[in-house]
Each structure stands twice: as C-alpha cells, then as structure tokens.
Amino acid sequence: MSPERIHFVTGRFAEPMLHEVVASLAAQIGFDYSVDVLPITVAALMTPEWIARHIQVPAGTTRVLLPGYCSGDLQPLANIVTCSIERGPKDLRRLGQFFGHTAALTDFGAWDIEIIAEINHAPRSSRQQIVAEALQLAADGADVIDVGCDPGSRWAQVGEAVRALIDQGLRVSIDSFDPHEVRDATAAGAELVLSVNQSNREAAVDWGCEVVVIPDRPDQLETMNETAQWLIERGVPIRLDPILEPIGVGFGQSILRYSQTRNQWPRAAMLMGIGNLTELTDVDSAGINMLLAALCQEWSIKSVLTTQVINWARTSVREFDVARRLAHYAHVHQTPPKHVDSRLIMLRDPDVLSYNDQQLAALARQIRDHNYRIFVSNGQLVILGGGQCFRGQDAFQLFDDLMQTQAAHVDPSHAFYLGFELCKASIARQLSKEYRQDEALHWGLLSEDEPERHRLRRRRDKQPPESPLGESV
Image (cartoon, rainbow, N blue to C red; front, side, top):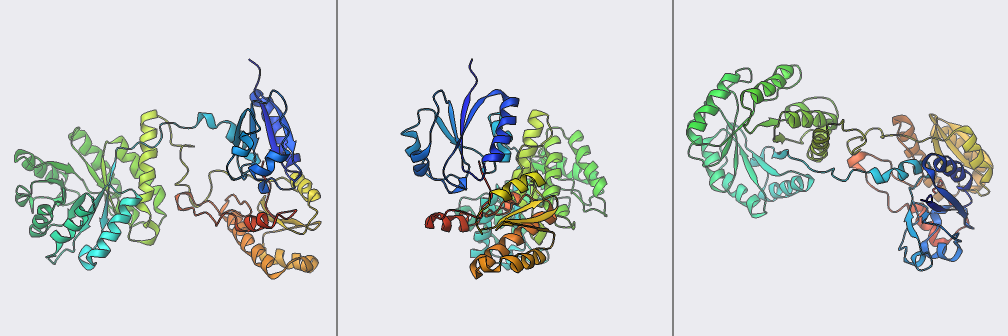
C-alpha cells in the first residue's frame, strides 16, 4: 500500500517549526507530506472560508490537516477538497500525540462504585437550600443524596425534606441514629439508613429498607459482624462499613479491617465513608479520592459516602466520579491508570512543552510587529517582540524592562493585556504548568475556558496583519 500523504496548512510564523516537527514524524510513522504556507503570519487567524480561497492541495493527498485554532464550519473547504479534512492540535509540538490518537481509549468511563453524597447538618438549611444542594451534588456525579441530621436534636421535618428530594427524582439516604427520624425518612422514601449497630438494630427491623452496619466502636469489628448476622436473620438487607478512621487515630488498622471484612464476607455489600480522610487531612482531596477509589475497586466496595464541607475537599464528588472511572478501567484492563484521564491532575500538568534557545531565536527573527509573544521556557518568562527578547523570572522586572525600550508601542489596553498574560505565565512557571498565550491555564476538572481567546477574537474581527498569539500548526 502507498503511504498516506498529508497536506499540512500553516502560516508563515509557524512554518520553520512545522517543517522540523513534521519531517521527524514522517520518518518515524511513515507518511508522505506537503506543507502549504498560506499568506498570513499567524495560523490561528485563519477561517475555513479564507483557507478555501488560498489552499493548494497536491494530487494524491489523502488528508488535509488544518491548524488546531481554525474554527468554524469546514464545509467551504469540503466543497473544493475531495480528501478528508480535520483540525490538528492547537500546539504543533503535540503532533506526535495527535497521530497516536487512533489508539485512544474506546471503553473508558464505566464505573461500578456508587457515590453517596451527604448534605451536612441538613436541619439547619431551608427546604429550598437542601433541594438546591442536592441537585448540584447529583449534577456533580452523586448517585444518592444522604440527608445528614444533627445528633442530639430531633428534626420534625425530615420526612418533608426527603419527600422534596424524591419529588426531584433523586435517590435518598438518611444519616441518623434517632429511630424516629429514620422512621419518618424511610416512610417518605429514603432507601438506605446510615448507620446501624447494636444500639438501634431492633428498630431497623421495621424500617423496610437497606441499612449500613457499623461496629459499636471502630476497633470492635466483631460487634459489626454480630449485628450484621442478627439483621440478616430478620430479613433486613445490609451493607457493611468497618469505619475508615482519620490519619493519626487508627487509619492503618481501619484500612486492614476493610480487607478483613471482605475476606470474612466475600459476597456482602460494603460501603466506605471516605470523608474521614478527605475532610480531616491537610492535603488536596483529589489524590486521596483516587487512592480510596482504587482500594474500593480491589475489595469490591461498591459504595462510598463522601462530604465536601472543608474548602480543600469542596469538589470531592466530582473528583471521585473521575477516580471511580479510572479505578474501574485499571482493574478491568489490569493496567496502571496512567495516560488514561488527566482530570485529577490539577496543580501541575500531565506534561509541559518548552522551547529551546534556538527555537526562540528563530521565532524572534520572524516577528516584525510590536505585538508581544509570551512564553515560559526553562524556568523563565520570555517576551518576544519589537526586535527585542526579554527574559527573567520576575514579571514586574520584565515589564519594566519592556517599558524602558518599547513604551511607545504599549497603550493602556495592551499593558493590561500583557499584565494579565504575564500573571498566568508566572503561575505556570512556578507550578510547572504549560502556558499558551491567550488560553486559560489547565486545572484538570476545575478548568474554565477564557472567553474565546478574547484578544485573538478582537483582532480577528479587525483583521489585523499580526497577533500576539503563539504559533499553532
């Protein structure tokens, strides 16, 4: 078979680096190629309509690869190009990853661990607040909403609150040791009770629903086993929770008790309350959620109870929703959950591309305007533009240096823009994140896009000759 022939479309600014990257990939992967350098400096300013007026596709081309930033309907190109057309990556240095995208995961996303998300101190909130919080938890990935009651006081409206959630199509559990509260909640439709031990097990016979069985004390696993057997004999469906204890007060032994419980009860349903670790440990919760999801997957613990009260754990439901999918994929495929889904990598980035001095020098030689390109390279901030190159780690000093030589070319709006971008670049440099000018930093599942590359959009509307944006394909 003849090798694939790919026609790469780019602008003048990215041409040298594109030739370098594509030549290497063609030799490795084995394809023929051509490069179409269209009469525009920055490829990101292209539109399909504009490309259609300038593109020259050689005979024998099997695929046309457009710049990743090229937005809009591709139909104008499809009308004149007979082969397939697609957008490449936004950064041409990721072409290697792009050409491996055919090996992308096709079965990732399945899960079998249920998330029970608790509304803490529900009696202190209004009905509307409870419903609003529950709907948000469900949107974040919760399968069951746990109504958390206040120990020491009886909530007369618990049944009404449960019914309000049921009316929203939500599944509900009740978290209380007060038999009267539990009776009202289960009568209103709560399907699970947290929790039961020897102190309240007799009342559980009349609730008509599944209950979570716990030890009388965390270190007395035999009491959980005894209560579980007592309830089974009376026809009460159960889930076992040996109780996860915080670090410093029995965490290691409590982990062992989950393993021991699974060995003693190989087919029993189990639950792990993971909030004791995420809420009571001074560390970002995503990593903890991933590790606990892995343990639950290996020990077939099919439900977790989580909270998101303290600030560092306030996205725990979303985090565990990703974690349970990663754990399931790793377990099914017997492979570490690496390069599968990067949404839990939030502080840093999965990988960071950089520019070497030769590449920066080549880019600098091509810039003929006074719009500035900002990069992070080898632990430094770099500003290119106006025939100058400014480097350093201090954004304030860099801007002072820029203003001393280029002040006439920086109006207030441009100064604000440069400050905004230098702030992002400084954060990226400090945390080892990837920085791309005019784009939001990547924060995993917490990422938020900037408004359509605000600076670039305005410049495209004005149809200028240049843009401050870095290169794409």
